[in-house]
Image 1 (tube, rainbow, N blue to C red):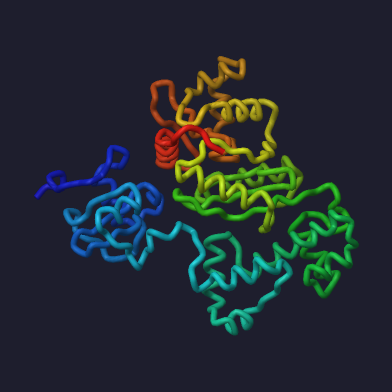
Image 2 (image 1 turned 180 degrees about the vertical axis):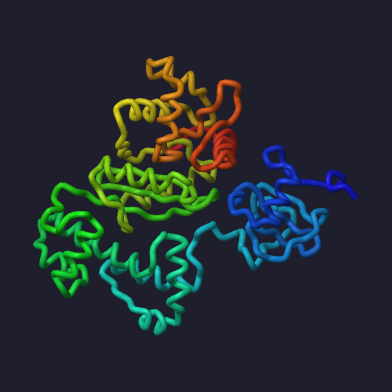
Length: 362
């Protein structure tokens, strides 16, 4: 029987069956958030990247999200756990994460992890995959962040070192200089960008904030993320370190409301950190109403430079604060979706979310 003759449940927003089945077979994580695959023979539904044995194509139907699959009577796959947000902390690691969050000066060895019933190698791999650094490096960066904060509040170098869990001033100085680029006594002109991961229905995002506000919000799989982070650090004369910010809970809450269709606007302070031209373009983006789109040429006209269409497009691409500065609302003059750092499938889904959102609420 031909695949096209099989009953399907996918909506117009989903890719074709052949594309989705190929993604399922190849365990393509780039399709996370695009669809879930429901297996008729087992009654379960899976992520596109599920590692479980693959069914025959005629035994699969596709849904845009887990909620729809559940409504059709399917159960969650116990292998890939599609009901759990992508990038979320696994149950076995949650107690350790809570312990680390409560004490920024914490120092733990491999033996300490074993005493907690954890495999040090497994912990290291998880941190390497999710944070791009080992667990030991993650703890060290948090201690440096704590020390920097104290120095900014006029603490002495010795007090900052001891209060951050360092037993040796020389060891503290070496670690601090490696992380910040300057000795502790010469850090007055610098600032820290606190970075943390936030979970969304379209995948984890990396958030960054200074004391003044949000300066970074990008999907963690964006190819240019490292480059953008380096540019941001240079523009702000800052170093990005794992840490908490009073802006993060507000950001997380507003994002969750946005994805649930209950919010169409954001009221957080933003640190743009761009050139004069870029900031004009980014501020113009913020005037596009939720649920609507503009073309690049319309954006160029709005900022008073109708011939600068390509420059406007480049500035859109350099936007470091996704969603809050809605560069996803800019499309081609012919109505087609064009480049988006988080992937065209996310751009399409964001527009779908917004076009189904009720009147603006705060």
